[in-house]
Length: 327
Image 1 (cartoon, rainbow, N blue to C red):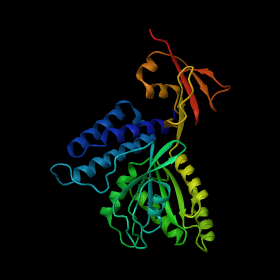
Image 2: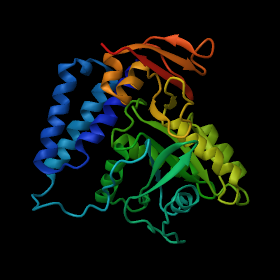
Image 3: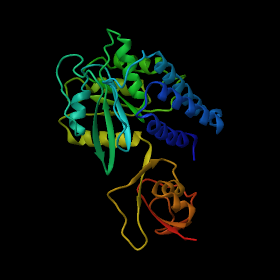
Image 4: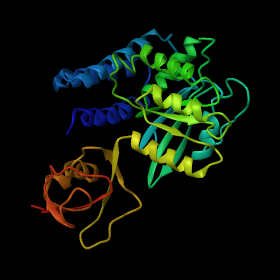
């Protein structure tokens, strides 16, 4: 398993462990997670060093919060949901909320004025049996830095598996891109051009006149994948859904019982690089305890129904059948 895949599993677990915590309970759990990483000597890996710094920053932020009685309303708190979580990250009035309405089940207020969205909002985008939680963050105002709001936006972005920069092709793309990258660097989500997050760009309003040159300029400025969209063009929205799935860096694994047809509607969604062992653990701990062999259909095998062991690495849309021997 690659270092990135190990970290992906850890991030899933961290999100689960701290989801309902705040105050002293949150600080204690974060400190325990850091100690656990060090006990396992994972802190020697660069990606885990970055993760530790982020956890330490969360501890500092929580300690700086004023003492509160009970749980207060947090307009930026959204429980983790779905098979992956993606943040829409951009300036105000670039079309994030309209995009949310177009690709998710959410109904987000939109308007031709700044700061229509004033809190973090969530919706679910479904792509080929994968449920992707989309977080619509309030837009930045690059002419009026409000660091209280900016910090909250970045706090939520840290809880996501990937971050999508939303850039309006009808406005100055260089100004937007440079501002957003600066925010990510200031928050140490990007440091020395390295990051543990997946980034891509959504280029909105591509159907407006004179945006073709802006798109070419944006493509020349960055190595990130750029997906141009129009709310009026269904094909462009379908391409966007595919890109959202790809930024999660996951695979869909379908399971089947011996002598039965596979369940092709409810895949296990796992980090890329996952193995048969990960599937067994996900299904039931006894599957690994009494594991005999697995049979595979799909891209990762040499022929349909190939027998493999627990260390076999799976690919997207593989079908797995696990055989156990009870003792």
